[in-house]
Amino acid sequence: MWLDEKLKAKKEEIYHSSREAVKLMLAEEKDEIVKMSTISVVLKKNFSYYLWVGFYRLEKDELLVGPYQGSPACLRIPLSKGVCGKSAAERQTIIVDEVEKFPDYIACDSKAKSEIVVPVFNQHDELIGVLDVDSQYKGAFDETDKRQLEALLKEIFSS
Ligand code: SME
Image (cartoon, rainbow, N blue to C red):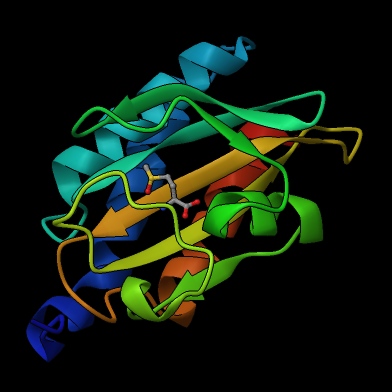
């Protein structure tokens, strides 16, 4: 099933309140794991079309699973493998409307139908990992999710 227009229309509002909540909670916080845990739980609670949300942290040439909400996930992803590895290698957000059509997709949960992966940078513009979101709907993620998630990650990890 594809994400319906009613849910799409509510995205901006939910991102707005989620970003406000995360900013308030993390106002004095410096620790990256605390930040990742807080972002994962707030987003999972607020977005009904998020099936799995969490972070993979960059360690040498691999992405290691970090704080997340959802079913048990793959623990390690080599750079350039899967949507997460490609996003990290290219340092760009990737949106996949239908995961079964992505040639190098790594399946962790058969319920996942679409995905967005957003790279995470620290204040020195170094890549520290990626934020990965899976949806149970096809075509769940668009330019709104991209813009809002990139802005959220920037305000929490790069400033
Ligand atoms: N689907 C991802 C793997 C991580 S899970 O979705 C949690 C990928 O292809 O990189």
